Length: 162
Image 1 (spheres, rainbow, N blue to C red):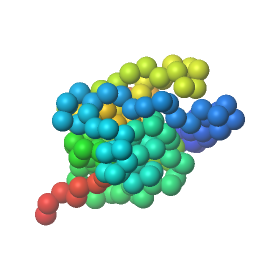
Image 2 (cartoon, one colour; image 1 turned 180 degrees about the vertical axis):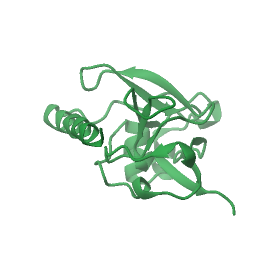
Image 3 (cartoon, helix red, strand yellow; image 1 turned 30 degrees about the vertical axis):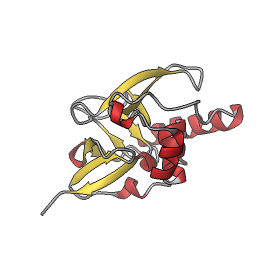
Image 4 (cartoon, rainbow, N blue to C red; image 1 turned 90 degrees about the vertical axis):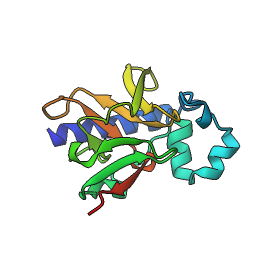
């Protein structure tokens, strides 16, 4: 299964590369009015990689995030607003090159349909600030069968307190 996931990820990346599709116009609208910031404010808050992913719906290169190898207990939070999105207990190695989770935390994400690669996919974003996180697929492990494939640049990791 990891080899198949890797091929899907590479195919998606190559498809985006050859069609010139790598990002959309903008992120989803923040559901929390306090996080409806100007683009200039977002550019000040975020590093360039996080801005590209969170605010322009970009995709980082596979296998480029240090969070792929993060194994400590803790919580993965939105890099834009620090809303907790995933527990480290739901993280698994998907073989795709992006941090993957089988379940989000309650009230952390919202979804929408994305047609950037022509085929409809389910995009998910931070429920509070609207920052793009990644896409969810139906090829994950039990118990959910879901794979929340996240851009590492869109996350920060908060280790559990000892």
